[in-house]
Image (cartoon, rainbow, N blue to C red; front, side):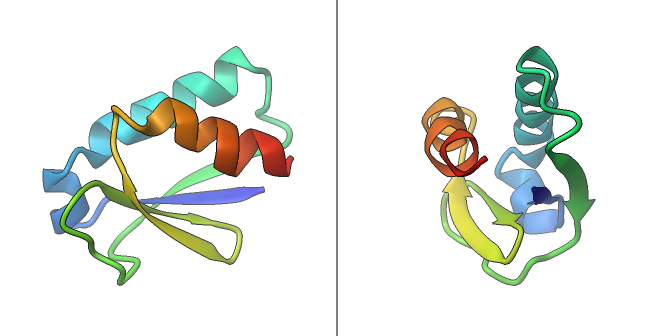
Amino acid sequence: MNIQICVGSSCHLKGSEKVVELFQRAVEERGLADKITLAGSFCIGRCNREGVTVRIDDETVTGVTPETFDSFFENEILQKL
């Protein structure tokens, strides 16, 4: 699974650095490094008023925040592996 986290200016202001850290920690703690490839991406083109934009393979999800990360990871990542 390829996951791109937007680190463009808009998402950076909305906390992309923290979301990247949460992704790195979640992948490491669950031993998923062989199943998930993380990458930063400049503007994915789906800016939202709240949160960071993330592309999972060919699907784009908006509004990921540190507060919603755990449920997002469970529902959008773990359930699709």
